Amino acid sequence: MIIKDAQFVISNTDWQKCPQDGKPEYAFIGRSNVGKSSLINMLTNRKGLAMTSSKPGKTQLINHFVINNEWYLVDLPGYGYAQRGKEGRERIRTIIEDYILERMELTCLFLLLDCRHEPQKIDLEFMEWLGESEVPFVIVFTKIDKLSKSKLKENIDRYVEKLHETWEEIPPVFYTSSEHKLGNEEILDYIDGINKSLKG
Image 1 (cartoon, helix red, strand yellow):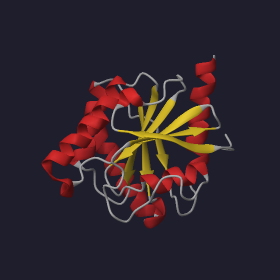
Image 2 (cartoon, helix red, strand yellow):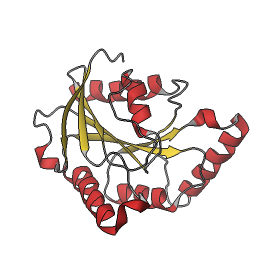
Image 3 (cartoon, one colour):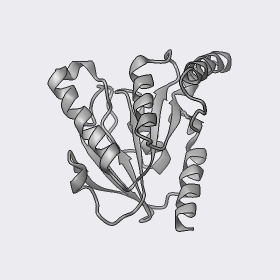
């Protein structure tokens, strides 16, 4: 799939105020500072579409971008940012959970994980919750250019091992580097495939 057009549409804290035209939505989520905005900019080939920041916890709204006038790319707030304080974290958690559970147009959730880190409890618990809630999701490892091939394999294997403890079948996995433009074709082809199947 080639992205010819990507436009910002609306920001919300309330899933009910999101676009009502029934287009499929592909939402991107991850812990703060996982490289979400950079990945969105890489996928759409638009440098400043999603605001990148070295300061974690920047995205605090549900951001809708319409792609090729066919589907929405949704930028969700990052979860688990400690410096937000309990009240702030709770507010963000409510925004995320309500959108994920209530939004009928959500077609697939892309869960971003930083490949440099060990399996994190917060990510594993979030995946567990997605599984229990029967939310279709895929795993996207980010920043693969930051590790050697052997270290990357070691980290991914550790993650897969950990997931197999609770998951019979692991969701599809993508490997990305925003800096080196790796993984964008695979993700866009995956979205394109789902869109085609929806059209039947």
